[in-house]
Length: 351
Ligand code: UD1
Image (cartoon, rainbow, N blue to C red; front, side, top):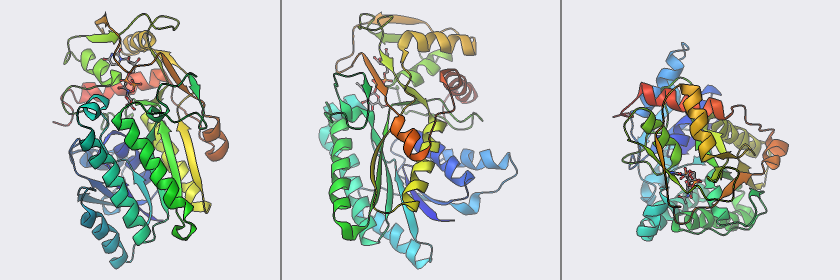
């Protein structure tokens, strides 16, 4: 089995993807700077396997490091070569993702997101690592006029966070086009990842007050937050609240695994791929389903629309089905159940 580098491995999507990769037998170098995560997550990842009588510790090499530091990433590739276990592929999750903060501090986002990707891709070219799966986002489609988006939709991000994601896709495209680099690229454009691993051992663990709706709902459910503010009930949707395509984080993680294996088998590929369910759920529907599935109360209030929000965004995921045979297995009920299970088991997150 190959050795893989996972950047941002301690984060929400990174940690769930590590579980998938380890379950498949891959050896991982897990890199994280912990600016927005905690190294405690790895104990939980190990425990998921221990509960099944499997010891994966020898397959998980944990490194604390920051991709903004060019030498740090060069040393990782260099040491892997010295150990005669070169890195065959990279899953690049590391980055910041708070839209509001990116507007307040754009330079920080270009540094943490873009510069980090630049250093990583430079090191990959230098050390002849050929495969990268990049954690992009549906946010790059911006204020699209269509509500169901395929990969050919116009790229038009509307904030610095989205701009950095789109710019990294362009950087990867330029490096890919130089054939001598022999780079294989997949830009995975996520819709709205929520839920948690069914064990309740790992899940989303935002530092401070969450920005996205799902961690707010789970924290309201355990009374850590008083109520949910719903941003507008006058959107042109069936019940007036915003519609999104929520996707279970484990389905997303499995999509990464399938994508990586596709890249490794096929040379010279540059793929843009939506990962979403193709199903839209309104804020009101999400709240009602969460309440029913978990038998909890979610107090809410309607407030003004949030600047920069849109009414509806849903993935056309037919390319993912066609290309890598990826079909989401978990529905919105599973997402609500697993997300709450993680929160009640870890009311204070990982501490
Ligand atoms: C947001 C970001 C997007 C980013 C994604 C990352 C914005 C404008 N967009 O997407 O760029 O890629 O997170 O995960 O920030 N809502 C409420 N009350 C809340 C929070 C949200 O009603 O307290 C509503 C929103 O209006 C929206 C839905 O819930 O209709 C989902 O919001 P959110 O979870 O923040 O995701 P996005 O806005 O889709």
